[in-house]
Image 1: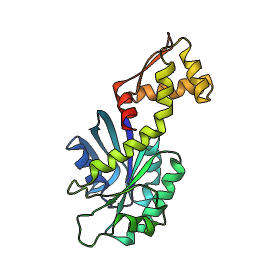
Image 2: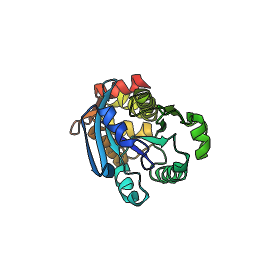
Image 3: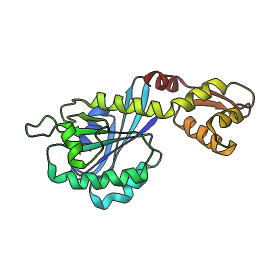
Image 4: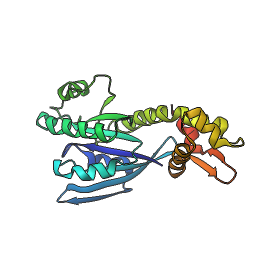
Length: 228
């Protein structure tokens, strides 16, 4: 499984996005329609299972965003492109996520594009003062518009971030002393490599015979390489 953090400012459409993507396979902890703990859903694209973790958007839930961000493989940042007055809060949460997950692939959903007064995606980027090269997609969580495209774009960025590691595992995984060979190729020590491989195993991207030190890619990992 791939863990995706879905975050952004209050009432940007995160809960609706999780509900729409997961098509009923979701749970929500909220109070009067406002998320106070998390949204959680599951979706499968290109043979790869995504676990979606939506965060509360209110500023006082910063500690929950920190907890939910741990172990995320990618970030889907949701912006309300219809209400410019939320931009300051969105930028604060963006900066928060950049500190928590500085090297994790991220894409932006410029949400609520079904509304007549909405701003185009690039205008949303400019309003937030963000790099224009950051991938941003027009979406409507309510109408299920652009959601598959934005998730596929995030999948490609995640695949690119893991490509080298997965290819190294594919080359050396079945050889004798494979972990040492993988460690050398990735410029990691043995302990770091074993921990990294454990994380990949937990995500369902490899299978491992630790006694024989044989590592194999799962079909999901092969799909990631194809997605890249």
